[in-house]
Image 1 (spheres, one colour):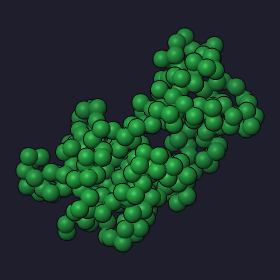
Image 2 (spheres, one colour):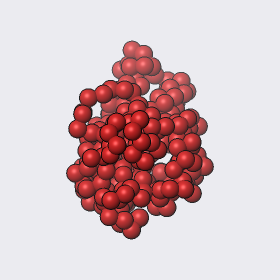
Image 3 (cartoon, helix red, strand yellow):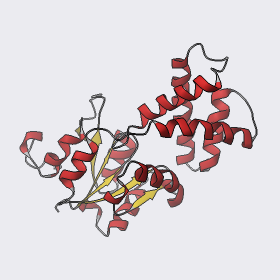
Image 4 (cartoon, one colour):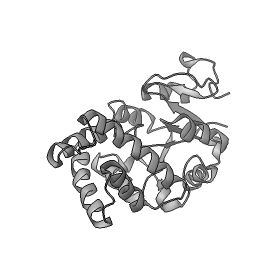
Amino acid sequence: MAIRAVLWDIDDTIFDYATASRSGMRTHLGLEGLPRAYASVESALDHWQEVTAYHWARFAAGETDWEGQRRDRVRAFLGDDMSDERADAWYERHVAHYEAAWSLFPDALPVLDVLAADYRHAVLSNSSLHNQERKLRTLGVRDRFEALLCAAELGIAKPEAAAFHAGCEALGLPPEEVVYVGDQPDIDARGAVEAGLKGVWLDRSGAGGRPELVRITGLDQLPGLLRLDTRFGAPDTFG
């Protein structure tokens, strides 16, 4: 069957989360002060990424709620068993700097423009609706997507098949007519394929490997891939 819709990841796919996260935290630490546990700002930023990934995985697995993972990230990062109120306040001060650094990847808008006439679009994110709705509106692209589904409200997260199926149901399309595009090879691309969708791994860093996955290194390659352009390999790239 022909592809009729693109289901998108947001963070590190169309939105440059990694840059915004590091930039925002760098500014935050400049004002709050570097915790004594860290020898440098860069080591602190690396640890913030690590605790974020760890507690995000706990949230995705249903081990904590949305607010809980944020508070646990702050406590782990600062090494302080602080109250919920203090953790929330620290995190909100950080968020102000993080949001000031928000930006789309340069290839995001051009590709959304190119695909607008031929494909329907929706979002499936392992985040919260409040967070991603605000983000997409701030970045000026919310109206590009028919539906926005997030793990916090769905109660299920990628790579569970039910999460991908919820995205397809929101579009009113069978999984085989939908392609999922995301930056994580297992959570996004492999999860989509196992759920019956087409899956595309956006490997912006050029890590390579994973020959079983359909891989692109920039969104500018996506239109040709969807239209089975032979520049990207076999005439039917999705097999």
